[in-house]
Image (cartoon, rainbow, N blue to C red; front, top):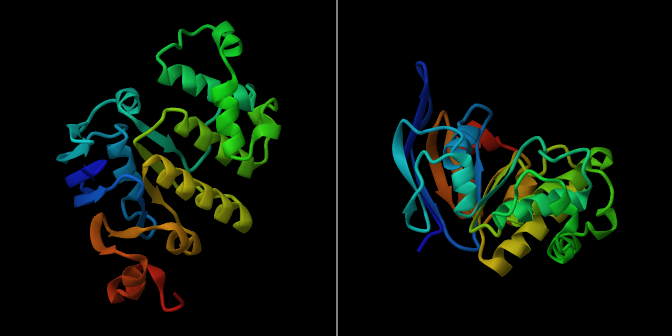
Length: 247
């Protein structure tokens, strides 16, 4: 069974059809890239999958369960993690505390009190940070971290939910080239190890073609191509609307 199945997803804003009849599936452990020019509808797709937008038409299934239009907190509870174009962490809290908050939420123990965050067993959060190469940064406030490190913290927060599906919206935006490669290689390794389905958007085509198992291409809200990286790279329409002659 596919982890995520999407059928006929559509969304309009006024007279603008942002997403038009998009259908696809993502398997456990698969890295699926969603690419396209600015305004193609990528973020709108993500926001419908995550519950931030309700689709006008279409259905979304997570492990066979219909999650169409559910609120983001309910989607999170069902096993969907997400990272954002602009990192979303608590800047005044340490790296460890940020991950502990996510673990508390996953365990349904978060009650709005500060004490449990510091009193809980740190071992699971420390193990996750070590896996992501962030052990030495554990006690530093997120507000003073370099941007590449913040991206790793955000990934740790998403993984703390033990997700079946991980949505990554431009995960390497603002990072140096070497950091991009390292982050996506790490993500791919964890996804395959844990059987996490990953759907990601990305403008860096080197990252996409190096790490995606399959690629979906959106243009003006519609899927114009999908398949293995080599096939997508060679597709004349994709080269015309997005990749250009140099790819």
